[in-house]
Length: 396
Image 1 (cartoon, rainbow, N blue to C red):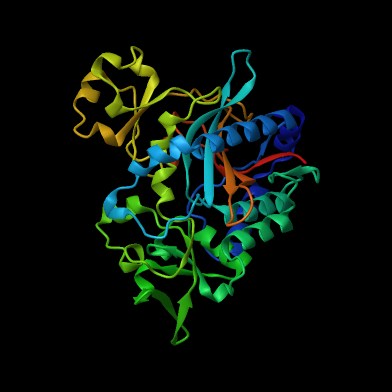
Image 2 (spheres, rainbow, N blue to C red):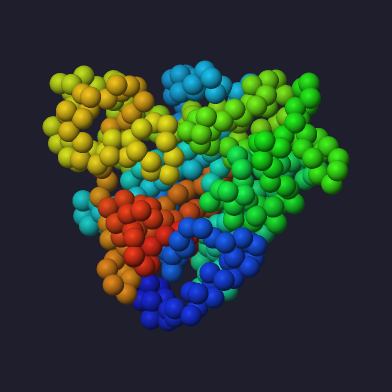
């Protein structure tokens, strides 16, 4: 944390500027923002930003190791396996809690990860929103690897659109107009010139896919995949032949990596940034941790914190019918590191990678969630302020 930047921001903060920022975000996106946006960005020291970067790359190394990739084959449910899988994931998100170290310093601790896109478009827009309405120093950036804002957009373009005509590239989602992430879709459309298309609107003819636009069928050559399988399963939706056949499309974020890099990965990742984590099915009852009150039970196949249980008991664990679908992870105590007008806030930082068809993976941006509750999420922060979606800024 950077105390002088925090003090200056808090002293200059005006509720009117925050309200104007929210209006600006919705006007720029053309859609309401259905989740809470925090009043402030997070200010990281150069040292903490560098440690977050090291931690993210350690996780990347773990989930790209040959032994892990062999184990990850069993993470994909056969009924959801999609043909034409890529050699590696296109996207990687690694979530770290900011916790207190042994000496009182702030340290990252791994919470979750996913081989699936995050809000790459909205985070670009959000950083611009803070800059437009608050005094943010020119030497601070949310980007990594020396990227500027224009270079970040070009990186996204190369990763998602590649050499294709944007008309033939679609952002694919289930009923996109009803998703909380619709604002991110809108930002992505603006940045890259691609269309957001519902799974129900895709037509497969033989080994080709298309969508209707302006009274004609437009071929789909490349799919920026935003479909969350948990939602399809929960609603009993059939995603159609696009997800079952050998269709001649390029997946930007192949669906199988949604499973292969996920909560399933956590028990396989070890190191100084990683709290102990176990596949429940791999633990005999005699191996349950003695301090279960310090562990969190998580279903493997859930999204946005659904089904997470704190303070579980041996009786609860014994009663789980499908232990292969759960992990047991040691709880991380988030440090109250962000001074606000009332109580301090805690923060979780998502480190965002892209990995194109050529070249190595690149750490490009970040996403922050601020909380004052026991867990991150609106349901645990009712009637709180200075919490919600944000971005971390660090010295360039």
